[in-house]
Amino acid sequence: MIKRVLALILPFALSLSSCDKLPQTPPNESKKPIVSEGVYKVVAHRGGYLECNRPDCSISSLKYAIGIGCWGSECDICITGDNNVLVAHPRSGYLINGLTPYDHTLSELRAAGKLANGEQLPTLQDFLEVILDKEQNPNGMILQLDCKRLVKNEKEIDVNHTIRAIKRACEIVQEMKAQKMVEFLIPTGTDIFNSVNDLVINEYGIYLAWATCTNPARYGKAGAQLNYTKVLGSSTTYTPQDYFAADVPLVLYGVDDDAQMELVIPYYNNLRAIFSNYPAALIKKLKSKGY
Image 1 (tube, rainbow, N blue to C red):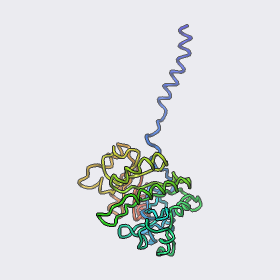
Image 2 (image 1 turned 135 degrees about the vertical axis):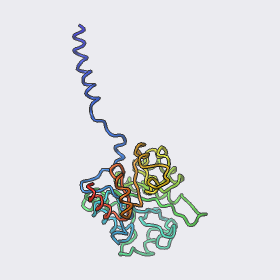
Image 3 (image 1 turned 90 degrees about the vertical axis):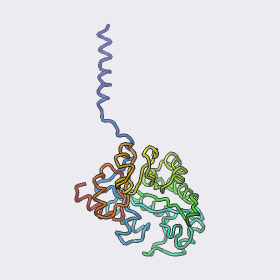
Image 4 (image 1 turned 30 degrees about the vertical axis):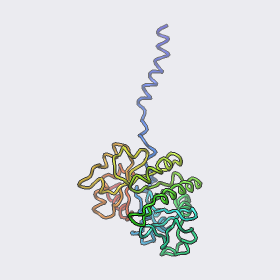
């Protein structure tokens, strides 16, 4: 009888033992970028406009970033008075074509001026149409939405316009089924981050990074996107290793010249991405080093 019981139990026990030896899924695998062959973990700041000499946050600069093999391209977003999300970099703190975007309609903002190459001011929908088109974006480059804090002066800081832009952008991204092709970049400070963190990540399932350098334990499900000097400077509180150890995805920005690239590239394999105004130059250097 005992032999019969052992004969039944032994194969089951062995199967459990073999399961223990199977490869384990790395923690937070979903936070790691999916990079196609020939693509580098590089994010082009405003489409790499300083390098390609095209208008920043334009369709033209977006296509430039796609063409050179970037993993991502960053752009700025603002809410308009008629609840559209405009892709544009505010000037003088809060102006688009000399107008406060949240006080004017999309048509009014476009009528006030075109981009230097003749393009009209693009909307988030315009950018997503390019990103979602496999012919125009064959390697699946993602879009980072920088949610600018619109500030008239130090006494007039109203984050509600930024929060409205983020919420409306989430709706548009969901409507166009682009959740996996878009990320949000939240400016430094806790006000906007605390207001939208749960909404963006949990309700809409969209990745979010925070530009505040702080204790990695404070990020929760969000990633960190920091100026490289915040973690690689001479008097830093936290190092890249602190974020890696805490499993917080880390992007370093401000990496533009040769010396900055040399400093940051050794961390490339562990970083989520490197963010640069000169993405082609950065990719060229990565290739020269065998990445």
